[in-house]
Length: 121
Image 1 (cartoon, helix red, strand yellow):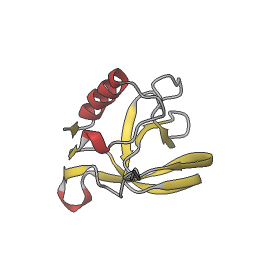
Image 2 (tube, rainbow, N blue to C red):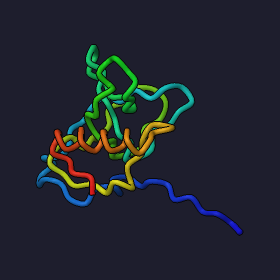
Image 3 (cartoon, rainbow, N blue to C red):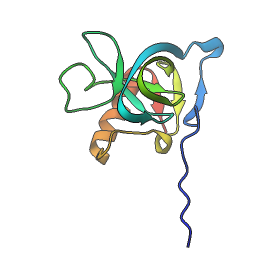
Image 4 (cartoon, rainbow, N blue to C red):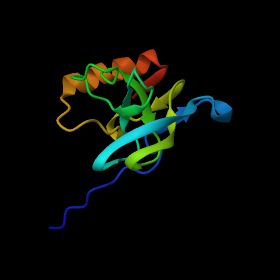
């Protein structure tokens, strides 16, 4: 039997957001070499340079706290990308987490999203 894997499409996690782009910002996203961040990836923000990277609860550079959700995919390097930052509802199962994220870490991430005004349902 063929197994099909659904890839996240841009913004497919968004249930609702504020009018006139209120929920969105643009931010500098840094993707490591040979990596791609899928749409709907949960991001943290590095305190020192304000760039966004994949959320990592074990980090100690600011990215251990959820700061945004990447709306469109991003490839290797640094580029400005559209980010969901506030006042929105998202589909929890559509969010893309770091490799090996446990249910408890995702629950913590959902709580941190709530502090941004983003509710994961």
